Length: 167
Image (cartoon, rainbow, N blue to C red; front, side, top):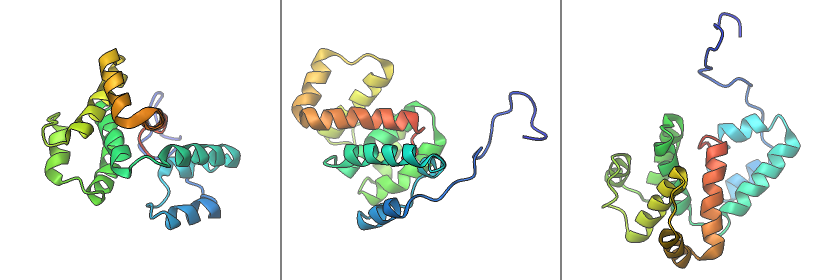
């Protein structure tokens, strides 16, 4: 990076974005998803990794309500102070029916506008990120979501953390 001082932080992508596969683009269109996120386009430089990462993401999302997945992403982006993630996912959350008031309240850490089941998910995200999930909290969410969806919510957090929320 010519002109950048030692230790300079990049303000844009360090690799040019590559094209996703035709299969990925077709699946996104078929399932009504937005264009491929920047992370997927960066990973596309390593086609086998991109394919496996995409397969993992699709399997996590299969059977997980889009609103729930977006709530996890937004809360994790908030906790990580990731404005990029927040900015990209607020419009998605709005498209899925979250109101501006609910999103603003979430940003302000006020969970009263969320339904009880959504509030429990946000509290779980908070606890996972703080490494403080209690047995009571885990069992309540397990009862609410079932084992498969609980695993998927947890993996969505891992995927979001790895991708810095760009999913």
